Image (cartoon, rainbow, N blue to C red; front, side):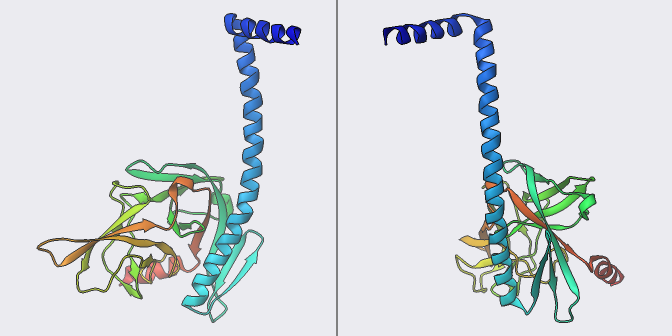
Amino acid sequence: MLFVVLQIICGFLIFSLNPYQQATFSKLALGITASINKLSSNVYSYLDLKNQNSWLQDQISEQFRESYPQSFIYLNDTFHIKDTAKRPLFDAIPAQVVFNTAFKVNNVFIINKGSNHGIKKNMGVISSQGVAGIILSSNENYSTAMSLLNTNMKIIPYINGQEYYTEILWDNTKINSLKINRINKLERVKIGDVVSTGNSSLLFPKGIPIGHVSKITNKPKSQFFELEVKTATNFRNLEYVFVIFNNEYSNLKKLLSND
């Protein structure tokens, strides 16, 4: 036992007092730690992807079946939403977030799917909880998306069966928190009400959650409320998303431009 103790003390002195041995040991230790962390991360990502996909399927199926009669068909890694005429309206492709910011003024995230997978600019992105962002650009294998936590991101809110033609905005004050201004005080809005996408968006199907009302500020000498909305998506822990695209986007865009 004394021999073992002395060996440990000698080893400690060698690696602590000699820079070369110390650097060699540190490099070896970091290499082993990195390998273990990589293996752990891969295992966790694989297991969590299954949970995320299951949760996403349950959430979207429940949301749309309550909103209007549509069916879901999952083919490989793509699902289709069909209307009563059996015509596909929306498709969605799953992707993994490889880079994400949540503490900047204009936050973005990058996903591991691009033009080779059919992803283009101006496609909506959702997480398993709700709206996540909009595609800004794509190369062959990766795409950059504007996060919901971005001052340039603007969505018309849908609350209690009614669209409010004022925008829901990120003002860079609280993470995972948005603001809605100019809601008339005569409107029946209360804390806990779900805020979702409505009919005015071509990028997202109606009924995708944006968040819920977490605070109502009664502005003095004004006829409007200011609402604070807690985002449905947790942007601090954004790992898996689905890119949503409207198959009739070009045709609808042409009709709107003609108007």
